Length: 126
Image (cartoon, rainbow, N blue to C red; front, top):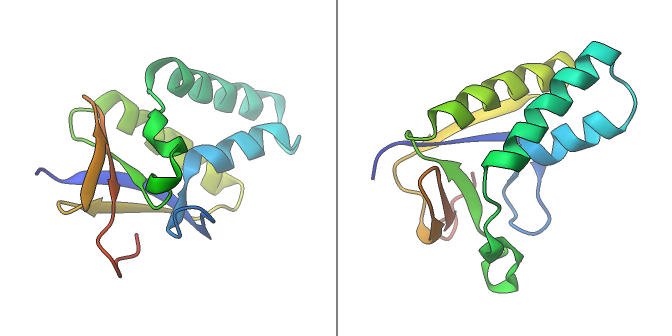
């Protein structure tokens, strides 16, 4: 498998037990009212793009897959570019965003053209 990439914050997701992805934090930042009008618009446009273009796998709703996390494939160049933009916005507001890479994501439970959702190997924390 080629190198996969994930953008996460330091906080742990209560379902997966791994670092939370940045889209959840981005929505919270958009909604908390602490942004200037231009920052709010920039964040709104970025999040709208993800809503329109990135499928949310239904497998993530299954309790059996609560440990599963999402990774971008190299073929998701436009999504990855926009994640770098999102990272910059979050970091401007005090959120540290880690960029993780792996070739061994664990047991794949979903895959499409842009992403892999997998359960990491036991004992591995991403």
